[in-house]
Image (cartoon, rainbow, N blue to C red):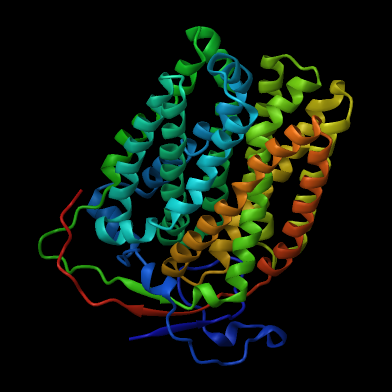
Length: 461
């Protein structure tokens, strides 16, 4: 059995199945074409998601649907503090370790680079062990990596950056597929909830790290503290692991081919990557920018935390509004423009008004991230394609995004000023808008989905 998805127009709210071609708008209907032969990327990265109905998973785990939503939120809260907390204590880190600006640029870039590199491993891991088991183990690995920050020296900090980035990359790739699979009739709402939790976690990391450092009288302890909620999330995630009965048939698994040759998939990928590049410039450097402009450390951290908190309602509302339309192009332009205005205000407006500009920046960035995840969901006809498109968009996208913090540090080192960052931010925003116009079209990616041969059950983790 083979099912082909031929770039058809997607309705506003996906229902978790392949939409037939007759649903496409006549003016946008793609011409029939033969699926191309699988590429090396297709062979190396086969689709990993199980196709058991979500009801069966819920029943097997003995949990109601609301519990799945709650634990998904708790896991999502842990996917940003590891990244946003470091920027709060960069000055103290450089002072106590003797680190140069170049080292700090590497330290803020490595996690984002690992988001992309290790995100590619998520589908094979999920196919081998099951998505829920992988999330559980990676949460514990991430906690161990964060605990390394107790040791304020070169190798532990680099090791922590790599482990945290790799862990967040793997879990982040799997989440959109879980949303598409377990909440097919509420994908837009749950995308907003998931994104909102990510933003809230980022706000906690940016705003609470300085108070924690003062309470512990130690910035390394404040950075390592974020291992605690990761362990708690793993404990609460444990019951959601599905348990198969002995007489149940093994679920079918699918391979998805053609994605890496699809133009729409690349537009989604580059839009995702460019908006992430902007976000990691802010996470990595905005606190230091505001401190250099004259704000004290606590006020700078709270300002950025407030900016990230402003992402929370934007992350929830933007996908709900965008999903009401046949495409999301207009919403993408509006939200990216708001973020650009907010960043320029943070760079150049009087400090007395910086909270207003930071809030606008947060609205733009929260909306952008939610729209990026929403395009992954809406441009995919089912959960199998969503998992693969998520892997492609986030892996390649985060690799691209890793250049943002590094380029920001280098520009500041070369020029001795933060003014040059405005040109970088403007250029990336314009490029993001252009690819967003493609990603926002009401179409599905053109891929071929085929069942994989049945294999013996893998040994559990």
